[in-house]
Image 1 (cartoon, rainbow, N blue to C red):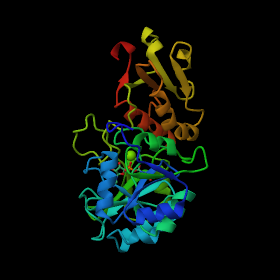
Image 2: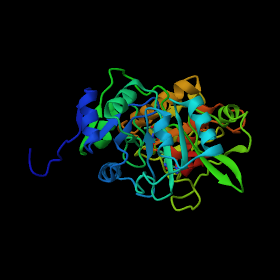
Image 3: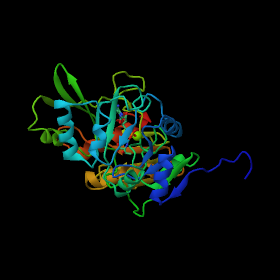
Image 4: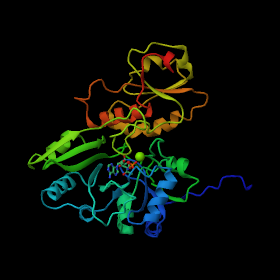
Length: 359
Ligand code: TXA
Ligand code: MG
């Protein structure tokens, strides 16, 4: 190999004990979870946290989620007592292990870098067997953002992680399952705060757990309200957007657009790859370079969406990726339809086009 050739550094393994030891010593281990692959490290080790930010090329302003085996470990990271702790306990008991991330005030044991100086720490307990085995063997809380380069499509297989992080010093845990991440989109993220003496639970990112699921879990808890405030930035610089929720996210590396249902036929379709949902753009199938439908239901589409976006960006000689609008009105859609709409809107940088003249 010449001196200028890139060195492939990622190591692939299915040895959980060895990977756990590597993480305990400050190494990076990519692990499958039921949502997406995470890039894990010892959550209380500052150097390891920095290495995760570096490997992902992620800005230090975007905090990391901590993964724990049991909710008791989360209570040791949060600065919560009384009513606040009992709300958190209710949510953990209802939704963990599973795709809900809880953000609450952190105590002094949590490194500032992990929280991007917010004073709030995000914690979740994953349900995936490999993630749980790794956490059990390592016996540490593990920080794990999605294991993609910052801004790129989230990974749902070991191959996706390798494609993004092959030049990084990362161990990748392989799963014998071809589709290890069965939910397919990242967890719902909610933040618990006290506002004017009342508790407010705000949904920051839509995943498989809905606002209604949260409200139902908290029916018997007084003094808490749930709100959905998934703010979208129109540019990366827009203030007051939850960290990591800027619009340019999950982007394939070729221009991607959401097309309105009124968008007419255009010659440019021959250079497009269509990623459809429930046949909304099936009329274009014979005109485009490649076409795939995500599936007939939101749970199948959520499982397929990131794999399909990664497939779409690799089609040779295509100039665009096009998706249909997923929903017209948020109200009646289920959690995974909302999540799908959110991820595809972000993949298209928030742009819905009425005509292919605009691309
Ligand atoms: O499903 C998931 O959540 C996956 C798997 C690996 O667990 N992880 C994941 O991590 O999606 P990441 O880092 O790609 O997304 C975490 C989101 C980011 O939008 C981040 O800004 C937000 O959670 N977050 C983390 N800590 C936060 C905090 N202290 N306050 C507000 N938002 C926070
Ligand atoms: Mg991510």
